[in-house]
Length: 291
Image 1 (cartoon, rainbow, N blue to C red):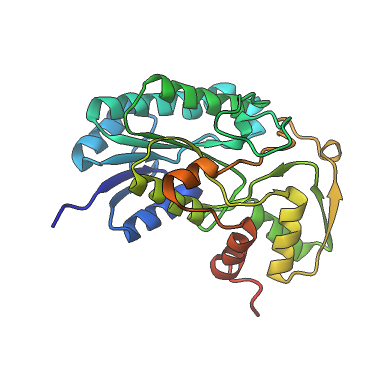
Image 2: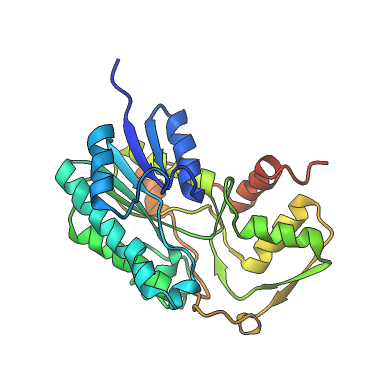
């Protein structure tokens, strides 16, 4: 019997993607070390190297990032430390140790000026510090020419284990008669548990590269909110507003739907619609809407 494959999941104990990825990999028979900042500082090369030498993983999965999109506008150095310097350090370590690397990026690397789903070959042009630092992290990894590197761009995440847009909006919908939500930004809502399953599919396909990995379909924030409120059975009106009515420090792409054809070609897996995934999240993870 062959030894179980091993994965070191940075952010696996507390992160939105990390928790789902840890569960899915363990269910698939991986031996997983789910690390958090309580275990060691993921930005410390020495600390990560000690963990790699002790655990001897086949893969490092980096789910750690600076994701406070608006705060990043005033904290560019902190954003760059996690979104550029950390993946670059992990890439060099993986190269030196012969370990595979799975890294997550974002739809915010695009400017939103396209009106059809973005391909991996489309030219990035981020509009925010967050997007710029995430793109810098991608490029730092690609420059290393690693043999076993997976970069997964994803978007609009919701899922169990950590607060997110959907859980926050449903909390507000329980308390308020109406919510005003932006309707002129469109993207790809994505369930963290599905993202984890699709990550596993890429590992099993042994097909490294840059991929767009999201649930299928598209929505505005307003449409996502309205669907979540309806599925949860809450009595709350959802009113559409434009971005200029809800100004924020960071510029968002008006359209950042991602095309997953390359992922499907590599794995044979077609991502399921975000509406189906949302129902699983609301019914099963949040235990709402079934009374």
